[in-house]
Length: 175
Image (tube, rainbow, N blue to C red; front, side, top):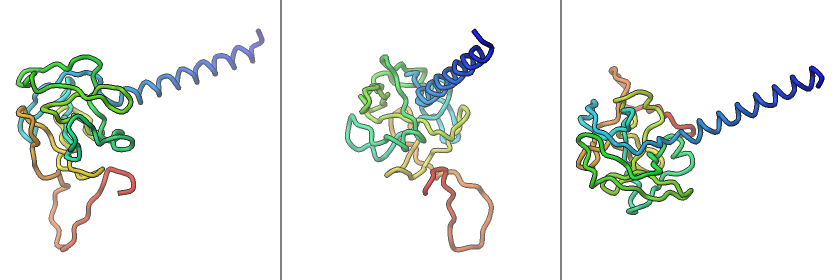
């Protein structure tokens, strides 16, 4: 084999590996560990993933057993997915855990019938940046161990203003 052929093969292999890695990142955007735990946050004790990321319910999920969050919504609010029966950590009631089938056939974890989601901008354990957000047709709230929404005002930037108008900054494109 010529040197050019070997280099071309190595480059093609590297590109293919990068494509597989990218696909893996997108696939694992939704948390696949079905373990739900309880953690103290600035909202009080709320449901979290095994890695401590806050779980939210979506008030637009009005039809029992169905998620209303797909497409761009699910890219900002990844559903908590589990191939197996979800497990309850300390303080979480196993009887309230369940799953629903999403349009693509994956199983989304529910708690007291509410499909559970993470928020893309919560980057570390205990963050609650999604609390009270109003996007994609409904509000998002952390969930307590009873399976109800923990309703607190959405976090603000702080500071004082003398303007009678409110300016809102959105993490979502086009809003």
